[in-house]
Each structure stands twice: as structure tokens, then as C-alpha cells.
Image (cartoon, rainbow over all chains, first blue to last red):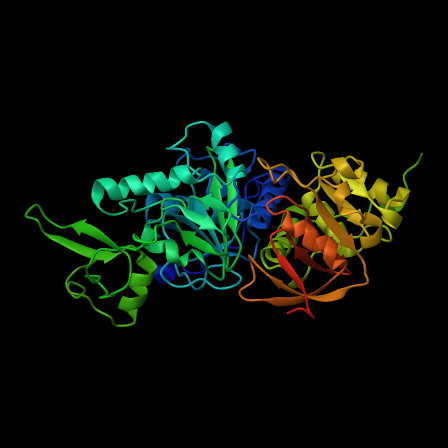
Length: 300
Length: 194
């Protein structure tokens, strides 16, 4: 399956649509927003999000950003919670295979554009790669302050006290910062940004060599992180940020440092932990690494 | 007045794919300030517009983006070319989303919109076309792992622009078929100081 899919792009797009689906004026509008986002890292640039042939919540923002940056020579990968083989990932990959004629892959190292829902791949990304995030709620302050007028003013005035109060209340109630995903970050010491609902395990990876673009279709916002941008997870001196993960090894490939999904295997309390990044896990198994259940489970 | 024939030529022959490749180079340039990127798919505008600047205009400008032309770039042939190929309205500096010209003619930077505190994206992007008298600088900030070197005109004006972050102007420097970008987020030190 993996090998069949790799580089299987037909090199031919459907004739009925413009290259990468969107019309040129829409792409220009998105491209201008992307450049502004790049120039002001972490700032949410409004853009005129279009209706896409998929429902809100399925990655319409990410798809529009991918369409605006894609070139015919790209190799495209889509992951959903780390997995290449979920409905969402498969349909978005097929969408661009058909409308842009680009090659597609499941291998992180081969991809030039990676659209992601809620994970950063385990394999470090390199210069020349672009990571496109699907973002549901781009405004990190939204659940603390419902008014867009107010949150925009708070960003303008760099007034982020409310966010620290929220993290403090976490500590007061639970004894630790219990926010485990969409953990707020401060970008280049200026804007507080929602890194999309990635697990906080992934937060330290946000400073990377690749370009990171964030698209929120329903909320009509685009933002970006240039390579090597300084991204700091908010915390307190006495309660420093901690990237957390399940305290296990992957049961399939034995990886010790990867982010894990818990899978219930029967109704008697049986469970296993597997890498959430399917390409990372499969790559390790191809290389001969075996976990606790790796020899017995068929997880194709 | 009849349009000159060369106002009608020099556009893309396959706009979706050519502008996609050109934008990718422009995005990489803005993401990695100070790095020089060659463009492969070039548009050709009347003199004195460089192929790189002409390509940027086609990729980024349309009826929604007022364009200001400065210096020798503000001539009938260039105005006609931009109108025909992009439909962008020509506007004074203060209203422009994009400005095109040589560095000296584009001055002063205070003439352009730097955005507002609520909407720092409502700012102008300057396309500085052609050669300029430059000084070596050391750049750091977003997009740069440690530091990088570049040659920029009028360091003091650009430092003042960067000091206004998140407000400010973003720049493309174009020459021939190459471009380099300088967003407002880049910190600039003259090479002698560092």
C-alpha cells in the first residue's frame, strides 16, 4: 500500500478545473495574505475564505492554503492526527491529485507540501518543505473573550494577561497546567498564537527549518511561522512548560520518544499504544524495529 | 489614446502554473529574509521594469490592489502594461498596496501605509527595482537561523521601519530575474557594528 501510493501522481489534472481548483484571483488574494502572515509572524490575517467542496471542519482553510502554494512539481502528503489513511486525509490527497495533478506520498521525507490536521510529523522537516495546518478556531483568546473586536484590541495592545489567568486557574484547580492540546504560544515575543489543536508534545517542534502556514476556513484567518521563528509555550517560572506523552513505548515499532495513540483492543481492558504518526511507525518497522506486539498484530 | 503594442505582450502563457511557481519563490524569499531567489517563469514588462518585478506584479496585483509607480517606472508604457495585465488601479503612495520603482524615487518610507495596530496587514509592500547604492548588513530575526548577510540601501530608514514592528512596510528587491525580500520583522545591523 505504502509503496503503491508513493509517487503515484498521474501528472495529469482534471481539465474541468483551474490548476489546484481555485480561480487565479482567489489564489492571489490568499497569496497576499500568506505574505503578510509571513512578515508578521503569529498575527491572524483576515482573508476572504471561499466555499470549498467539503464541509467546514474538514480542512477548508488548509485546503485553500495548500491550493495557493502548490506548484505542479510538488509532492503532496496529508495527515490527520498523524495518519495518512483516514477518510479526511485520503479525500484531500485525492482532491489535489485530481485538480492539480501533483504527485502524492505518505513519506514525510519525500513530501514538499504536507497538509496536517492536529499533528507535526515525528521526522524533522527540512528547508524547502511547507507544513500547512488545518485550524478550527484560530483565536487563542476566543474562549476567554467572545468578541472579535475585543480580542483584536487585546492583540494590538499586547494585552495577554487573561491567558496567563487561564493557565493559573488550571494550576489552582488541577495542580498543573492541564491544557494538553492547542497549547498557546508566544511568537517572537509579540503575538500569542494558537498552534492549532496539536498535542503540546509537538509544541517544541514549532521552531523548525520548514515554512509553517495556518489556514482557518470558517473563521477566515491565515497566519504563518517563518523558518526558525522563536516560538515559546506560555508558562510560569515555577510551573515550566512540559511536553507530555503517554508513558509507554510504541507497541508496534518500539519507538520510545514518539507521540502515541491509545487503542482499545477488546472489552476486557486490553489496550495498546501505537505511534500516532503512521509513516514514522511504518518506516521504523520496515527498518526492522519491533515493539511488544509488533510481530503479532497486523495493522495494515 | 492608443495603447502601445508592447502593453499587450509579456504576460504569462500558462498563468495558473507560472504564477504558482513564481509565488513559491516569492514566499520562500519572504520566509528567508536576505536570501536571493531566481525566478524561472518570467513576465516581461516595458523598460525599466525588470523581469522579476514584472513577474511579482502579475502574481500579486489585481483590481483589489492599488499600485503606486515611482521615478522612471511611472511612464505611460508601464502604466498601460499594468492596467492591461493586472487591472490594478494606479494610486498615490499613501493609498497603495504595492509600490514599484527604484529606491531613491520610492523615498520617503513615511509616504506609505504601515498598517494599523488592529490590522498591521493593511500595509504597503514596496518592490524596489534595479540597482541601488547599498551597504553590507547583518540580518537576524524570523526566517533566519542565526544571522545572514545582505546588502541594503539606507540602513537607518530600514531600521526605523523594523523598529515599528508589527507595523511597517515589507520589501522585495528585484534585479534581472532574481528577487530578495525584507519583511518588517527582520532586525538589521550594519556589518561594521556586528
